Image (tube, rainbow over all chains, first blue to last red; front, side, top):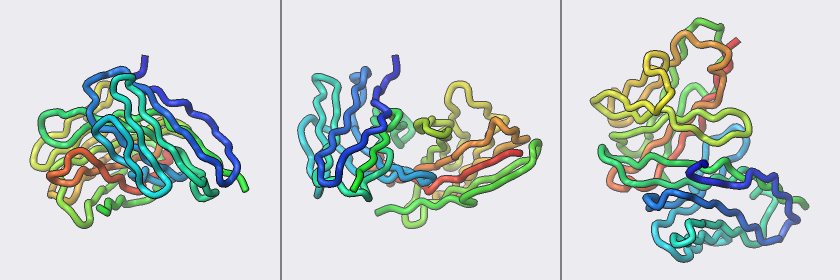
Length: 114
Length: 116
């Protein structure tokens, strides 16, 4: 079983729709949760970062963490064609030596259509 | 936000040659950098952790003699793919956490390596 599970999609939605992206994880040692957006042939771009259960909002994006269920979500409101990308969830736990190693989900490919 | 650059952005080489990829943190210092490999339609796989002034730490299954890592300064880490073969063709991405903010990482734009 993978430590982080994420549906690879593809997920296709009409412009303006609310998008829900999800990841589950099995390791309760994960403390920090991130969502990255990756356009084709580009490096990942950090979208959201959370470390506690609950919701965090930033513009059209809302990250949700439920540690008791080991489940995280990213919601995108009023989705735009420019949101079409692969969305990767990532998690980390402390380790000695500085810097946290990230464990990624497989990524969900999202396409927002006109 | 923090900026991480990589050079080159793409490289094509012949089988058996070595290729060096640079990762630089442009506006912050990074005592630690990470190197990932990403195959088409797959997620990022951590290859190694680059530590300034000390040896890199490699993930299980990654050959340290094939993927040489040097972290010569607080803003530069290099990955050298030695004796490259076609199966080494991939997208290589580095990342660096902000010093003091160890929980978030900023990624470079990636280097696409094609070995003929």
